[in-house]
Image (cartoon, rainbow, N blue to C red; front, side):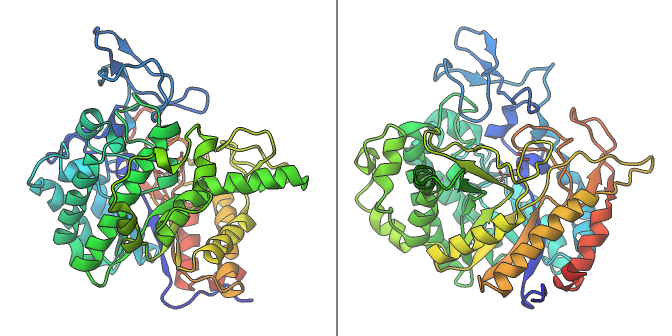
Length: 492
Ligand code: BG6
C-alpha cells in the first residue's frame, strides 16, 4: 500500500514558548512558572530555586510540582550562579524570521507553536493585554503567511504567569478559569481570522508546570481538582471560540505514548487496561463531554474517594457537554509496559525488552504509533492530529557544524510509515503531523540542549553558550523530500 497521503494533509513542526522563544524579560513579558527552573540532566533532575519565608534559599529536589517540605509562602527566585534555560531558550524571539524561512524551506504548511500567556497578560490579572506581546505574535503570523504556512496555536503549553500560580495556587483555583478564558478571548479577537486550528492545553493528562514553581504537588485530590478546572476552562474556551470564529477547530493535546501489558498473564493485562485508563480519563471526558463511568476507580488509585470529592459548579456538566473537542491531538514518542503490582500511573513504565532505546531510555516503537492512532479513533470517532513525535539524540556536528543524523531519519522514516499505514490501510482520519521539534531547542524534562530533536542544528550548549547559528542537518533535506512527495518517498 502506498505511503502517499491525502492531498490536504498538513506537514510541519511543533515548539513551545519556554523551550524555544527566550526573550523572557523583553517586550513587557511577565515571569512565567518555568522561568524559575534550572537546567539538569538524567542524573541531576531540574529543580526550582526558592526563597523560604525565613530567608533561606533552597532547591526543591525535583521539577514540576513535586517538592515536599516547601511552605506555601516560599517564593521562586533567580540566583546568579544558576542557569535558567527558558530565559534565552534558543532565542526564537530574535530569530523568528530566519527560523520560519528554514521551516518553509522544508515545505511545511503548518507550524504549531504556543503563546506565552505572560507575554499577553504579564501577571494574568490585568484587564488590558500587553500590546507588545500581541505584536510579537502578529509578526510571527505575518511571517508564516508569507510562506503559506498555517498556524496551529497552543493556548497554554504547561505554564502560566507565576503571579497566578502564587496567588491562586494555579489550576487548583476556579478563579484561574476566568483568567484563562479572558486570555483565550483576547487571542481569538486578535488572531481569530488568521488561525483555524487551536489547542487549549498541551499534554493535559500530565497536569504539570502550573503550580508555584515546585511548591505544591500535583498529586491526589489536587491533581484531579486542577484537571477538572482545566476541563471546564477548555470547554468554555471551545464554546467561545466556536461562537467568535465559526471556522475554528479545537483540540486539546494528550501525551499518549502507549503502554503494553508486560506479559500475557491475565493479571498483567487487566492491570494494563486500568493503567491506560489513567490517560483515557482525560481523552474521554473532553472528547465526549462527560466523565467516564470508570472515573471513580481512577480517582481511588490516587487516594481520592471519587468525583464527589471534586469541587464542581452545577453548570459544569452542561459546560463540558457543550465544549467538546473537534479533534484529538496527541504526542507520541515511545511505548512502555506495565504489570500487576506496579504503582499506578507509572509514567515512565517498565522497559520493553523487544525495543531499542534512545540514550534517554525511550523505547523506539513505530508500530506503537499506528496502534495508538487506531485506539484513539476507535474510542472517539473524531479526526486526530499528531502534534508531537520525534527523537531526542546526541548530535555530533563536523567542523562545519553539519550533522549526519541517519538515526533521526531512520526514526522518522519508520514512524511516518506507520502513520501512513494507519491513514491509508486502517482509514484513521488524521489532519496532520507536526514533528517535535524542527529547530533544536531546550528539553522539557532535563533542561538540556544536548538532547536534540531538530532538522536544524543550533550552535548552543547546555549552559546557553554558543553563536545560536542555525545549520540544517542531513534530516532537513530528507524531510523536504518526504513532504514534497506528500509521503510517497517513504517507500523509497
Ligand atoms: C512533550 C512536551 O512531553 O515532550 C514537550 O509537550 C517536550 O514540551 C517533548 O519537549 C519532549 O520531551 P523532552 O523532555 O525530551 O523535551
